[in-house]
Length: 496
Image 1 (spheres, rainbow, N blue to C red):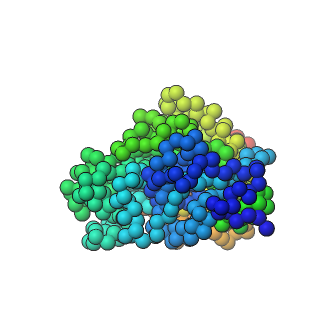
Image 2 (tube, rainbow, N blue to C red; image 1 turned 135 degrees about the vertical axis):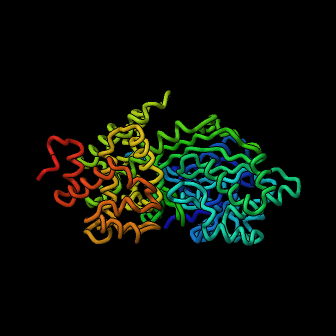
């Protein structure tokens, strides 16, 4: 049957499970985390759990929060188990479990309750995992989009904010009025310059509501950039059953992740911080070098294998990485078109990092799905693939492999959900992508002309020529032969 996960039953768990080694009653709130899903619990919460186990910084307990329907479900699940979570780390051939207890409460998913929590002077860090789509960015420019309907609604009625950023503004205004210090806003999302992105969105909204408050935020609030890394799949019935069967724990929301995690943070906290460096977090002046390496190797690597793996019928990432053609494709693309641009990052061993990434992608225990990597391409590709493509074009470097990656995505968009074993298209722009991909059969520019994704890249002639050539090649010879052709062009030419 298993033991239900609650505070009073921790002593009944099997000895193989690590449980909180600190007095949870002694914890006091210091962090409000918004978007409390799997990644936060596998990453930031694990670091804090390690810190509290040293009987340090107990005034930095976590309050959960969120603004999405999924947050309502998560709140319900966690409250029933005293806000405890089981974290299972899946190393090749081994797994370990720990119950983390850093969370004290979960705020009701309602604007007034969230503003009240944000205004609490005990909260000194507001951290975010709200996904790329939560920052109200214009897809073409990557800048704050003041025309978004929810932003316009907050400008029209700032007393009843509907967005997280409107709620933060209202809370900061209350703190300023009461003489309370502000909080640090710490993004943990996979965005280049995530702290700066957060600052631009918050200030962009503030300038339209209260310019004086905007000026105060610019002076007083800090937005450190951070680079976060830990492969954390979604939780399904498979993971819940694994935790029950292997560790005897009945957990409604367990987290399964890889044992590797990395967190590099700019050391800019306006209201203090816990001693993060004592538990392996790297505090630096500038994360840009670390961030670029991770986004271009790990995240772009995920994007590069996603669509070829889906089109070849693979369900799991580790299965795809065991395919010699997919492995060779990713290696060749990285070696020819990604690493040459990254070689300018002094002091970082990019190839050693790449080899570690490949090891992680081959980890069969995680069960990371190809469908997860394929989802939301319209937000992932502009963050992970298109910046490398723009750099290569600006430096007159080859873009043949990056053009093939886009052609594979295009082909996926026109057959997703219809070809056998190919997962359905899951994307906020699904209809636009599918329509553009179908038109690209006769007019290749139709796909790259989706400006919300590609902006002006359709006007880059070297890319356009290579992209059109790969689409035609895929139609004639198939996906597998296309990646083989890129890896060994002399053996697999484009002629019939």
